[in-house]
Image (cartoon, rainbow, N blue to C red; front, top):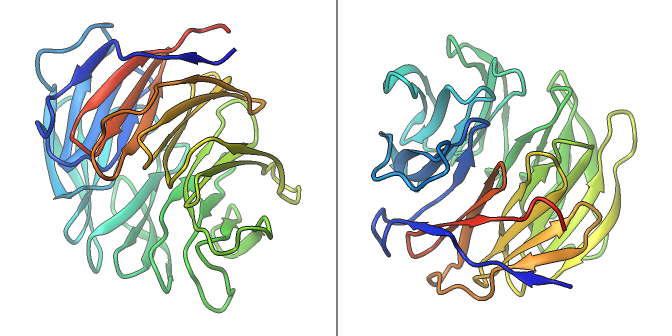
Length: 310
């Protein structure tokens, strides 16, 4: 039987931090909140902190990504990306691009960063030195960049000459030289894929769509991607997806103000009800341990404890 969840705490009053773009948890319980730049909150002690641990500058509604070891944060700037060391609160690297970095992602080993500017200039570069490794030009910037195990990347730009669009997902090979395959369900070709999350326990890729569906795809290396579930609950654009650290749960948040928690098999287990969340609803979700963080359009971050067994 589906159960409702109530928040155990709320960070910030309405509009206390301003519009929120993204959330990200480190494996040690640091919560990064993208706003104008980013704020870092330490939730590792299991209680609500009195204030943020540190704040870093960046673009308005900045793209953010935590390094795999949680020691650094990459933040979109007006003209590129800056990397900050969280412990020392210092800028350690800057990579210039031709406009604001709209999306970015770390490689699984923390050595590379993929970023794309608002003008579709896509680059892969060394995190330590800023040195350019690969570059491509997209007709439109993607809505997400996701680095998969094995150095592959999942993204969804419109790109000539491959003829792909936002309603398809490109899977790039490990060398980042060519598109290995295109994900396309062949059914809702007018609705964009809007966000993505890869399970930490399997090769299951969750994709959110503009029309409120969540699709689960098997994307193991060397295998043609195939869809095995379509999850239906949300009434509007899915804007955030996050797997629990053990891969047993998937959380989804949408512009309709709802958050749902699904089993790895696609069964809906929990929901948060309709939250008063601003005109754009839920902006993002993130997961650490049994704690689910939910950012809404009104500038709040709600925290939920999700039962470890069901």
